Length: 148
Length: 264
Image (cartoon, chains in turn purple, orange):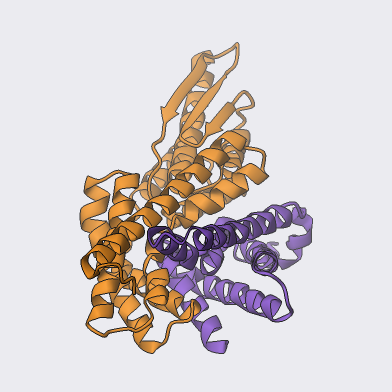
């Protein structure tokens, strides 16, 4: 599990680089990507289904992204996009294609449905966290030196 | 005197338009574009600016009875994501609000600089793509060899994306080919015994093609009430997802045809 969290973090850095995120934000992106996967694994172990686990993970990483955005004074998008990547159902794409091609339509349907659930988990997670007012996150604002 | 006012307003609105253009083109949400544009206008005392921002265009009008009127429509094609530019414009807009740019000409100059921010070096992008594929292969349960193979697939796939797909194909065809190439490479590696778990290798390998920015921004736009832009972006993301799946499926069925019905 630790290996997976680490690779989620490192893979996240890879994708942030692809999207042109400056180097100074890599650490934040990695932490958020790792945290998202951590949330997902924990939720699965507590007996959640895929959709619910992804929802919980998304809420966790979206909250962290908003805190990071306030703290680093930079758009939330940067952290959010990077952090969501580990949860995107890449395997779902493969399995759906695989079952379709091999004419196992029921399996294709069920793996497609799982991918959809994952996507809805992500959507709902983001939508809910962005309803929280900015004030809540303002505590993370970096303290400015007083200018006399 | 009246003329002066008119020119100033036009300059400010031009700068706001330019900032909005950069933001929209490089992967910012609609609400951020609107907010930044009105923030710039407000700071320079232009109260008359009105903006209508869509997924692929901005319309701006402004002007008072005293000066002239201002109207611009700009078409902004969807492009790749360069979050560094979004960050830079965001930073600039904050600095404007703090009063660091009293001269609008300097803002323009700064926006030009942002437009010319250098891209990450090509070899870095390629290695990053490999990293992404390799590590995400681990996430879907791949072992050391599978992940190493996925790393190489990711590297080769991105070389293909950079030199063949991006300059020559549109999104749908490009991603179908991307899916084909990813699947082909995985199968080749699998056949020569480099990596044993084909499904894990594939799940990692297709990740560099996945449209993360369009997907995330689409959700955020819809959450913010920008339904048209949001649904266009989600449609964009869905098309890419489906194209990748088609590509992978095509390659798998070709392989199936060659081996006579045995599917890995």
